[in-house]
Image 1 (tube, helix red, strand yellow):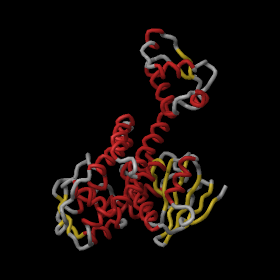
Image 2 (image 1 turned 90 degrees about the vertical axis):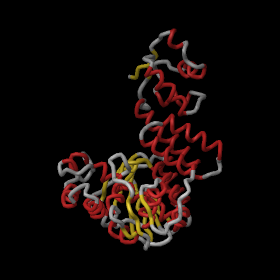
Image 3 (image 1 turned 60 degrees about the vertical axis):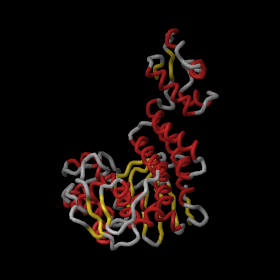
Image 4 (image 1 turned 180 degrees about the vertical axis):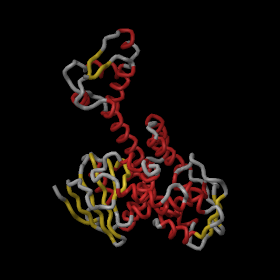
Length: 359
């Protein structure tokens, strides 16, 4: 099935939501005045992204920040298999950290989606063909829900960034040394700004969009890891700070902790679009992770242990009572009166307690 249109009739955030909820597989091509970009999707996951000059930009940024040899990065790209299998080996053979490549590809995607959402102009073409042959692609590996959440967060918070970083003539100077514990873009900017760097030249040397460069500089300024001559003091927004921490928890797979962050934010401001998108992302990612542990077609079998079963909550005992050795996980989810996420969490708990085995 092919689908095409423009963002005036089908806004980009709604398009991404549709592809995510439908767990689509195929290629999404986006075009606007700044160029074209392609996203390669597998069951709602962004496997890779492609755009003109992408590989060269990744190689240049890693070389400028002394994280890799630019020629070796390009050589690794040339050796990538057409279908994207075994990406890790292709980069590691050239002494390039594949995580760095993925992070830079993700960074480009976040900024591109945010810029297109703000512009509200452009066209899209969707096809179920996943062929990457001939495309200058790089691995990104993230969910559509994460891409949507981050890009909308960038859009909503861009006004604060523009208020502080009002022009390209500002000079950015590092106040701390880069560390492997820091996010990749923070490390790169701290390296390049060690002796002071003009914001405009910094953006041009990186070859990245203004929204991406200024946002990361803003984050460093907020954390007091850089100083920007002439910029006003950044007041920490507690909601933005909690949203960022929630997103980090999701990336680290700490879904229960992320749900607590969501609960606090929803109680304080349920109308905030950023909060609602974080809640959707946490729910979607948690469900996807649980299905990784509990394949939908696996058939659970209960291991009767009366003492352990007595420790379950009433709602958990109800779910365990549905297990009959014939229904698979997907059928149990449909039969359970509890939410999909709660049913999956109960099944995962029973597995951890040794009360359930899958066949």
